[in-house]
Structure formats: structure tokens, C-alpha cells
Image (tube, rainbow, N blue to C red; front, side, top):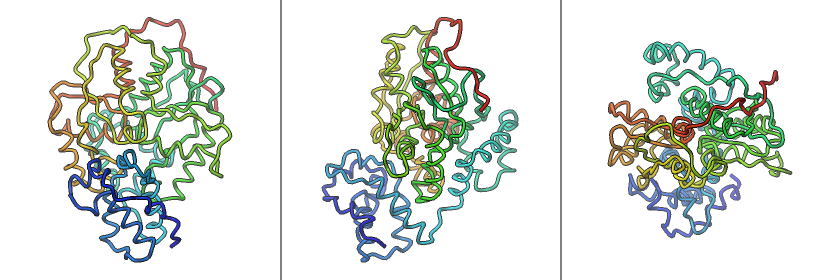
Length: 414
């Protein structure tokens, strides 16, 4: 194996700054379950002095990939890139990703498979998830257990929104993959809010999954296939709006030319940061605000601007939202990690729910994995709290004056 593939792991100075920020280390108190321990494993593997047995891969497989360690590392070790790289070497060596992951990744990266699943979900939205669970392949049943009940009606582009590549002065909306099926309302709410702000928004029709599921599991060919589709779909866009922070890193990497450069790369911006930029200072409310809590996904801490933009957006409506679950680290979702390691995921989620949210509270979060995981826990416990995206809060509580026309272009025939 080329030693240079993992040479950046040697930049770790073993200072231990990362340890208090690592969710798996907090649970296991084992160096091999910490960032610096995993970096030492990578280095030993690169030098050929460690055998890549099941115990070795187990320590790496249990890493959530949250990159909270990377955000605080004084040596600026590119931990996320190294983790992706060693998992790619794992795949090249013949160790396949788990079947559940492969099933979910296959559907996520193929629009026809998502469309087929959407057609399956439509009757399930009316009749419930139990019949659907019986007919789906076993690899997809855990997704139904995670899905909200009742199931929402899957995403369909609203009439009046352009389905074409973005032109100058327009915002291109990234739809994601499973968000279209399991949490479509934030997409709808975002489009309504942008239209009322007079922001021209288009939906590039050939876009696909950001590739995070494939890239973080070392499936390089699939990740590059998806990246190529998205580069083509978003060619010419100057601003790409992303609702889920878990898509940020992969999409930013994807929307660059094959040689690693881009003459005019688009700005990939998380939705709450964009709304914080364009909203008026104060917004009239339609009704009395509910108690709101703000949950911070790991990817919002490590890759976005944190929750400051979320709090500022909510404050424009008069909400004094409180942080919740902040010090517990990851909620355990982490792409398919929560489905592959359910016991470890449940233990991490217990930490987030200590203390539990008050009854009737709205919990605002900006990542679909976190939203589904937190929502499923609330449903299991028959808790009356609800999960929202910041766009949904704006759409529900902002008292907008009626508009004579919506500032979006007519639907394209493309």
C-alpha cells in the first residue's frame, strides 16, 4: 500500500485536545476509539507494522465521521479525509461495506430507485408503515423504522418552480436523496419562503445524492459517479442552497472540476446561513411562538457556521430558542452508522436526551439524519415534541402579506 496515502496521519502530535470532543471515546474510554488512537492505527497500517484484521477495522468502522476532532485540532490533521481514504483502501482490499449500507446507498444514488420507493411510500402515507415493512427488502426495513409516522407524502416539484440549471442571479436548490421521501416539508417550506423574499430559485433536474453515503464508506467509484452527475447538474450555478449539513462536505468536494480546480466554483451554503443573510431584521408573526430548542448536528459544528445563524433567524420572529443536547456530541445517526451500530447509536442518543426536552417543545435541527433519529425517539416515547427545520419555523410563523405574483420562473420542459 502506498505509504503516502495516509502520511498526513503523522501530523498528529498526540496532544489529546480532541479527546473531550470525540463521542466514541466518551462512551468507550479506549484510546483505539479516539481520533488520535485511530490516527496511530492508520500510521501503523501505512508503515506495514499493523495487521488489518477484524479488530483493526472494527475500531475504524465504529468512528462516526463527525469530524468534531478536526474542528479543534491544533495540528490541523485532515481527519475526515484520512478516514475516507483508509476506508477506500479497505474496499480495495476486498472487505465489502455491510449489506444494509449498500442497499440504502444504491437507492440514494439512483433517481429511478428513489422514484420507485416514492411510489411505494405514497400508499404507505395513507395506510401506515407496517404493510410497507412487510414488502420491502430486509436491507431497507430499518429505514422504515426510522421514518416518521405517519409517513409524509414524498416530494414533488411545485408548479411554478423552474426545473433547469441556474442562471445568473438565481439560487439552485439541492434536494438531497432520502430527504425527498422522509422529510420533504423543509424543501417545500424553503421554496415558499424564498419566493416570498423575491429570490429566484431553480431546481436542477439531473441532480442526485451528494455522495456522502458512498464517500464516507470508502466507495470511491460510486462517490465519483454521483459527483460527476452533480457537477453537470449545477454547472453555471453561483449559489447552491443545501438544507442538510451532512451533505455540505461531499457536495463542496463534488462541485469541482475533475482536475481538482474550478474556474468559478459555486458557493455551497447551508440554508439557515443564507436566510440569515437575506431576511429583514424583524418579521411579523402569525401566532404566539411555541417553546423552541436548537439541536446542533455534528456537521453543523464542524463544517457550517454553527447554530448562530439559526438563532438569529429565529430571533427575527421573536423566538428565544435555547440550545439542547449541545454537550453530548453526536446523536448517533452519522449516515448509516446508526443503522449499522444500533446499540452504540442508542447509547449516544441517550446522552443527547439527558435531560429530555420539555413536552410540547419544538426541536430545530439542520440535518436529516439527526431529525429522523430524534423524531423516532420522540415517537417511541410518545413525547409531544416535534422536529422542525428553520425554514419550517419561518414558513409557519412569518406573517407574510399576500403577494400578487410569486417571484419564480415558469416550469421548464427540460
